[in-house]
Image (cartoon, rainbow, N blue to C red; front, side, top):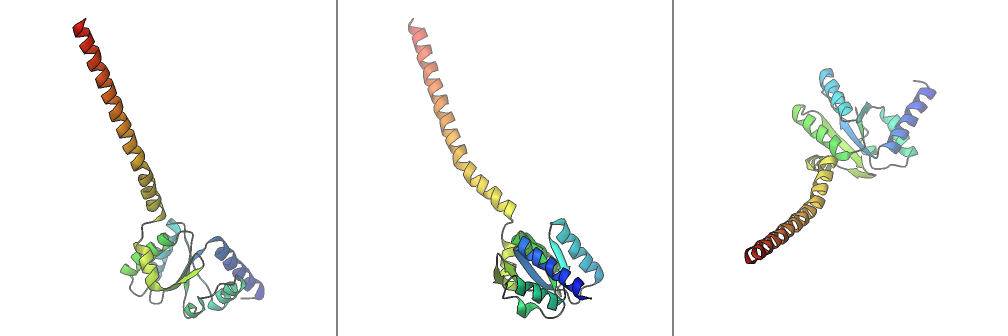
Length: 173
């Protein structure tokens, strides 16, 4: 690889780190080509990026964007997962670890904070962003629906009282 290619790769990684705030470093030692292809397909379907980088080029990119805490994980074969949503990526990683026990998370960076493999496992247990948003919408909807039910019940009672008054007056007339 010549200098221009290396600087292009460093610039690409730097751009990805700026665009996508969540990164997971994985060790894919012992995986078969078919398994890695399947893993890449899963990430692609979720809109995530999975790349393998030379550790020295990755260290340069991390130094240029002033990210610390991942240097210790940059040893041996390292696959990088770039994600916008940290929970979705963590769920895919956790699911794949069940199938391929040799696949491991080395470290991660979530919203600028370094995370350990145990924290990645905890992230995988959280509901996804869409699930959290739907729960939030349901929490907002529940009081409004209760209010609507109360006002509807009051209207029915008021109409019932008017109907009773009308029938009482029609009987007396």
